[in-house]
Image 1 (cartoon, one colour):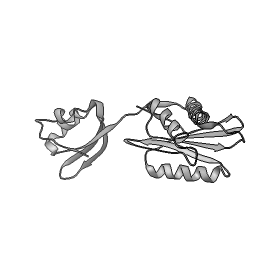
Image 2 (tube, one colour):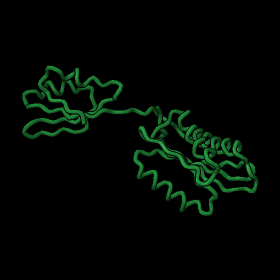
Image 3 (tube, rainbow, N blue to C red):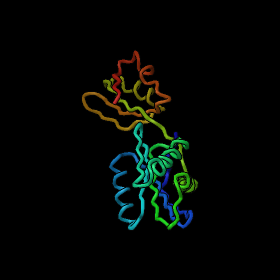
Image 4 (cartoon, rainbow, N blue to C red):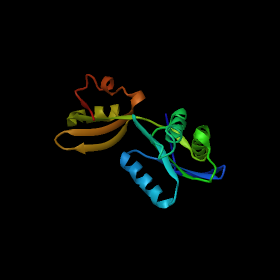
Length: 188
């Protein structure tokens, strides 16, 4: 999977209709709502404001009055075909007086999204597992040795030592690495 690294705006004209595609990197549904509301304010008098988004295992699209399956779904298909995640694609249409028909709408909304994607960059989307490692002070040297090549998010030194770490899900071997060490491992 991939995610976009920057937000982008792109405009295309198809048979006098203007299609403006806005792409955003998003991580929470609250961000999606905010971007959609901002687009509604920024692009007044639009004919249709359609969108598709995908975050983790959730996805949604909206046709905003266009015939069912001719706007939001084609945008979603572009997102899925490009294996993108944590993305919101909004396509705003200003009607130009010429009806496009169902096939024309599907092609137009898809093209608007595809053309905007050409202007952004993507990066590999990495899923992390996070853990809490807890031990006593006499195991500090061992803990530091075992976490030498691991991303440590936080270190807490109280009665016990607690390290919060993250590791790529695909490379996660924490349970095995810390077995037989008397270091407590708790997945967060």
